[in-house]
Image 1 (cartoon, rainbow, N blue to C red):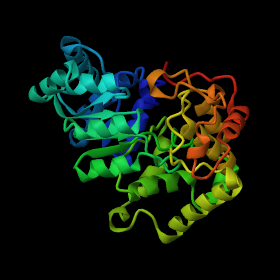
Image 2 (cartoon, rainbow, N blue to C red; image 1 turned 30 degrees about the vertical axis):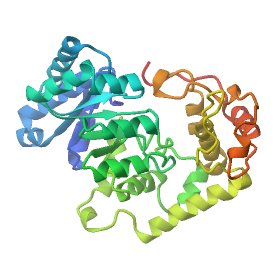
Image 3 (spheres, rainbow, N blue to C red; image 1 turned 45 degrees about the horizontal axis):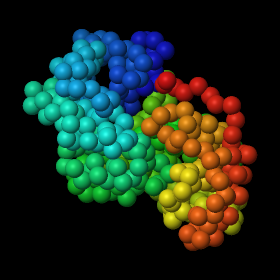
Length: 361
C-alpha cells in the first residue's frame, strides 16, 4: 500500500520481505499504483527465482458495489496487473455498512464471489472492515467468509473478542496496520518510549497481537528498513518460544499503569455504556483518542485521527466532539461517573486542527 513511489521502491520492499521470511503479500486496486508496481516486481521474481515466486500467498481486494459483469472485469484486471492466474485470497474491501454486507452475502457480490471461486480464479474469500462490531459479527456469522481483516491494536482492543470468535471458527484473521493506525508506533513519542523501555513500542504491539493468536499482521512497509523488526521477531527461534517474554509482559503492565495514572479519574474505560448518543456522537472512540493523547503522549496520532473525522466517508467516524449538545443523556449510564460532555469538549480543544491530506482520496 505504501511502497508506491516507483517500481524500484516496490521491488526493494518485496526483496526485503522475502529476506525476512515473509510470504503473504496483501494489496488492492484502491492503493494507487501498488498492484501494477507489485506485478512488475512479481514478474521479475518469477523469471529470476521461480521457487520463491511459487511460495508466495497473494491477497487483493474489491470494493463492494459492482454488478456481476463489472466485478468480473475488475477481478480479471487484478490478475492481469499482478501477472498471476489465481489469487489465493480475495477480500471485500471495506465491508463497512449493512448494504455492503447485503451486497456480499445476498446480492451481486455473493454471485461474484461464488463465480470467482468456482472458476478457480480465487482460493478463498474474506473481507476487511472498518465498520461496527455488530456488522462484523454478522459478517462472521454469515458463513460466507474464510478470513477477515480487522482493526486490532494494542491501543484499541475493542474487536479482539470478535477476532477470537473468528479464529475459533477457523476463520483467518489479519490485523490492519498495527504500526500506523495502531498509533504511529513507527515514530513513537518520548513518553511512550519511556513507558515501554527497554522495548520498542512497535515490537510490544506486534508481539501482543501474535500472543493473542492473531494469524497475520499487516506491516505496511514503505521501505526495506520497515521490515527489520519483523525479520527479528520472526527469527529461527520464534516458533519455539512464547511471543511475549516475562519482561515484555511486565513492560505492557507498566505501560497500562502509566497511562491510567496520567489520566486518573478522567480515564474512559471503553465500556460503551454511554451509547447510543441521541446526537450520534461516537463517544467511546473520541475519548479513546483523548486517553492516548493524555495517557501516553500520543498527541500526533490522536490529532491525525481526530481530524480525519467527517472526511473519510464510511471508513471512519462522521461526527467529532463538537456535535455534543450537552444533553446529559450519557451521564447516568457511565459506570465511572465521568463528566462526559466536559471530556468531549476537552478532547476537541486538544485535538482539533486543520485537516491533513489522507493517504488515499
